[in-house]
Image (cartoon, rainbow, N blue to C red; front, side, top):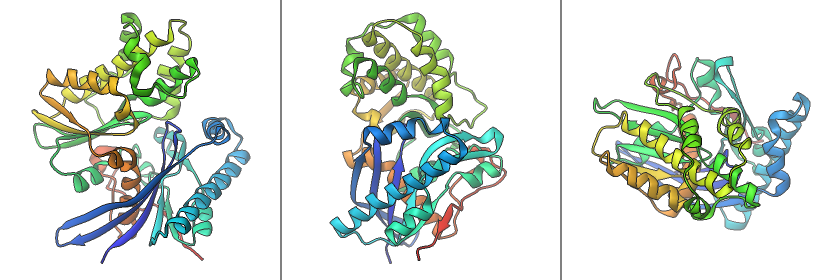
Length: 358
């Protein structure tokens, strides 16, 4: 018997709300899955500004935004259900990360599940990271369980989102996963200097010169650390690369070229330090559409016996929504999804918060 789950993701790049209707069906020891339909709801300037500045709000105003954003998610999801005739058993929503402070014992994603459930009339699961953080973990990464189950045949999985993160297997057949370095968040920040939301195809970066001193500074901020796991927060991205680049007055094209090269260099250093080789890595996330970045990664990979493969556009754009839907599926079936050896928690954790429909 198949289960239909609506997976919803709001990423750190603030591109929009990714919503996918996913189907899961267990057949013996195998899990069959399909993204049946999907769409992205672009954020208006108002929503972009609200979410970007959420960490500066008072406690009262943040709770108001949590409810307001939950209403928005619920409204957009209900429109899709009605317009496209979606039939779903429940909703799984990651929400938008405002604070991620595992060292202090908390992580905060807004987008009230109670409001989503009320608007859609469906049971809704949220708060996927909190239990792992409560158990002493980083609350990330939680993609490995989905990567290994849904996409077999790869030695690694690289996500080029607002933050670049990876799941990979080493020469001892042990899986590892961690956040590597800033990615699209920083490139988008620099693109806004040229009054553009992002560097389409990496065109500006490809025309820029490489500023060695700046590149060395960027790379030095995110060295490979064998003491994994590691999770990065939006606040850390803002206080490292973005803060440093904000003070630079060099040509925007040169800064983009240098930063894009630095992203490729840091990713290559991290992955080649641990992965079992030769390796085939599946690449997803919005950064896949940055042709210049992909060319730099492919070039660096050749030196290490690493090949980067791009899936279909649907998987590129909605893999994270599929992941959230799968975590909801595991939650509703009472199975853990955070692997404690990867997150640093005291035990394997799962158990998102469930809001029952009236």
